[in-house]
Length: 129
View 1: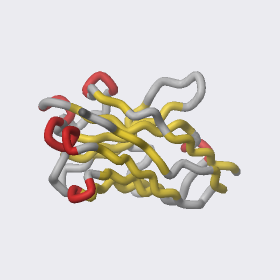
View 2: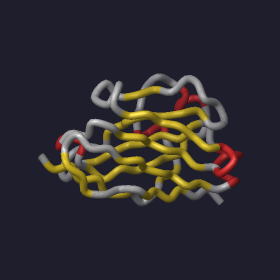
View 3: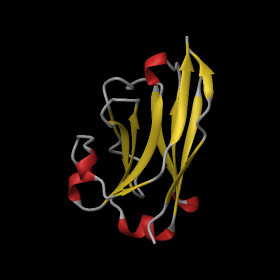
């Protein structure tokens, strides 16, 4: 069974850091090609943040808005994907979701929700100025 459970969201001040975790299942790691983080602010579209191929450390991809501030990584042994977020800004405030993509489309250098099949329920990140 493919499962994704996000954690680590909190309220922080601008300039602070958070590390989000996406705990997955063995089936997720056996099925998915990629894990990605998306975020969605109220009344906004869901935007891609970062993605990482399952079981490989390279070929990560980031949205321009977070490049240099956020880092996606994975602990394959524990089937967990992380999102380290530094120098947070108020505009980073959103619900953050992790998603698993199946097939080659998630390996494209794009972050489109339509490329991802399985989704977690999200974790809230609030950055105050």
